[in-house]
Amino acid sequence: MDLDSNRNYIFGYHPHGIGSFSALGNFGTDATHFSILFPNIRPHLMLLRMQFFNPFTRDILLGSGACCVSRNSCEYLLSGKCGRGNALVIIIGGQREVILSRNDTMILYLKTRKGFIQLTLKYGASIVPVISFGENELYKRHTFFGLIPNCVPWGQFILGLLPLRHPVTTVVGKPIHVVQIDHPTSNDINQLHNEYLQAVEQLFVENKNKYGLGHVKLEII
Image (cartoon, rainbow, N blue to C red):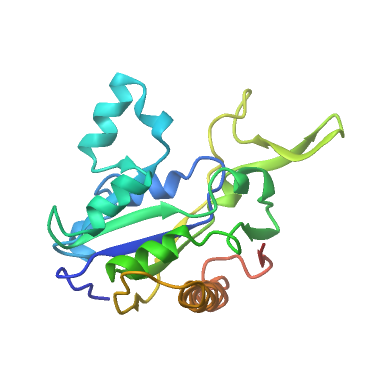
C-alpha cells in the first residue's frame, strides 16, 4: 500500500497491550523496514510526556522520531510547519487498555476517544487504522490472590517480566482521506469517528484468522 508523502497521517494504533512492544519496534525503529514499505513517510511514535523525563531514554526516543503526545506537538507535526509526510502513531486506547485487555478478547477503549478525529479534520490529515495481532498474547493475565482481576501480567522466567515467545503481526489498514475543516462540528467528528470504528472492526475481522487469533473477539468500549 502506497502512502502519498504530500499528506500527513495519523496512525491509530491498537491495542495498547502491556508494553506496546510492536509499536516501539515497528514505528520507533526501522527493524521491520518501515522506510521501505512506506518511502518518504516519517513515523513519529507519540508517547506520554513522562516518558521523556529520563535524560538517557529521552535522547533515544527523540533520536527515533518519537514525540510527546500533547496537543501542541500533534498540531505542529500536522500543520505542515515541518513538512509533509509525517505519520503520527497514536496508541489511542492509552493505559486504560492495559487493565482492560484479555487474552481471549481484544478490548479497545475507543468510543469516547475523539480528540485524534478532531485533529484529523482540522488539518486535513488522513487517518489509518493499525492493529497488532498478538500484542495482547505477549503476557498472560492473572488475578492477585483472587482480589484484583485481570491486571497482573505474567511473561517468562521467574519474575515474569520478559514477554512470552509469541508472534506479533502489525497490519496497517487503508487510509481514510478527509477534507480539511477548520472548525469541525460535533456532527463532523462523530461521522468520521463512526467511519473509523467500522474500519477498525473490518481490519480485525479480515485478519484475525490469518494470524492465529480466530478465537479472539473484538470489543470496542
